[in-house]
Image (cartoon, rainbow, N blue to C red; front, side):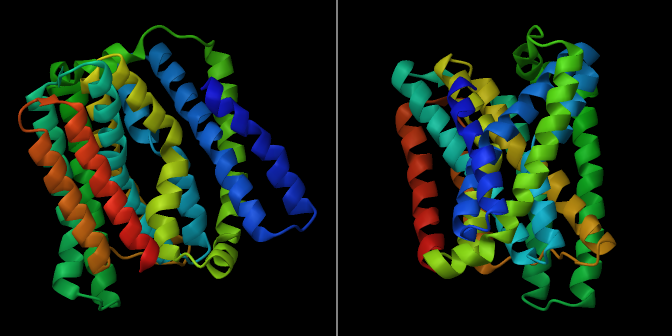
Length: 344
């Protein structure tokens, strides 16, 4: 958090650039830098509140608000009619967590600890849940292709409803009926460092600033595409997921360095699962409410990287242990995909 605090200076910079009508590209960059520490404070405040309310309610809070910063960004993008950017960010969050975050965690942890072990059962459940979730994202595109229309909206709504139902069942599974399997997340809670009032104030203030900076970020997307020559697909798949989850990513790496790979695994794969089971379907319903319908028809590029990312991660997690080479393999896979999205 102390390192990320340096980026808080980007908040007044973004405000100054915005009010002086400076380049939208500069405002976009400042907004991106601002969201990184703000999302960290949102996550930290949520964790602190979770300690006070107990393991079950706290687990529910962490599970529900784990990707709050990115959800806010995508909500503003959806309001601006950037549905393709929203779907790209869903793709980017899934592959970013299971390849970039988990890969960096395994690599960094493996350099300090020769072999790191984790619960194969928990890893298997996370992976199978993610596979099921992604199936719901893939089926609409497989059966309807690029045929956006009433059929796509109807199928997307049905799939979204089922995914949210499965998400609720997964919370019941992890927080009640099989909570012992997911004990590492409860151990991670620890003792509170903030008072309850401080946590609530920080959460509210950070959320408000994330909303403001998200609006600046979304407003600058077209300028960035035109000026820098990158595609909206690249911004959605690579940029938004990284800035929205940077703080959570750093936590996963720190846990790996402390030889707590189970927690790193839960953060990485659990976050991807939450995006697919909760955030994506929620955006489908919100899109209809605000007049910008969002379907679940992903491009072939997005489908391929999601499938390959899950397959690679699943294979590496089979033996219940990791090392730095496996981390390097996951990172290499992510970089290859990122380069592909950069040039298309």
